[in-house]
Image 1 (spheres, rainbow, N blue to C red):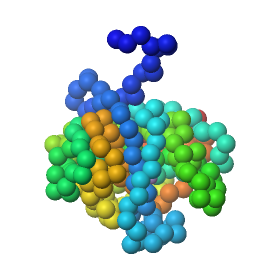
Image 2 (cartoon, rainbow, N blue to C red):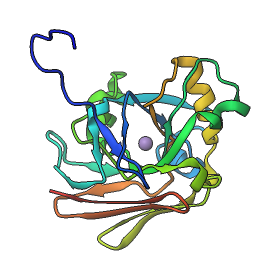
Image 3 (cartoon, rainbow, N blue to C red):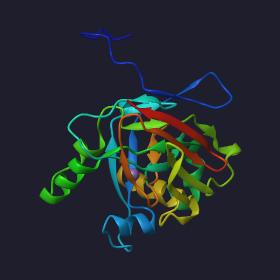
Length: 227
Ligand code: MN
């Protein structure tokens, strides 16, 4: 054990279905605009290649629970997403090998301070304040990949029981394998990396007291409340 000048922060970790062992999080990468209808609602062009942004690993809120309404926003948005949790790594991973890196899948919500993100876009500034804030990445338990099938089924999010987002993971412009392969060209991936693969249409605001339920067929659920 090195002699640190103060104790290092705890490793962010996510429960894994079927075991008491935790998945230690190294990095969080997120894909922007990976469903055609969401790309249109955000004013984008369907032919653009995928792009990525990051959240800090300690932005996760394992198993949801209570998520504090973040500071300095009046327009917090939900984005339900399939999350690929990597147990392997590498650089320049071919598409056909990419899914072999996946340890398991989970339901995640890419919480977004949309007003800060929009202001940053307008000014050509980075997105960190809009995307990479504290508790900005609620995530459900990770289900081992072998139990998830292709993980391309129904994806949905309700707020207080009302459906806001409902689509199919198969509708992604870039598949999970293509997303992982592309990310590995930009960064050397490693075990512990979480990749949020993008959200379908229907993103919208959350307020204090909202009860959020995310679900992905064959993957699992995520429940949390905005406090
Ligand atoms: Mn997103």
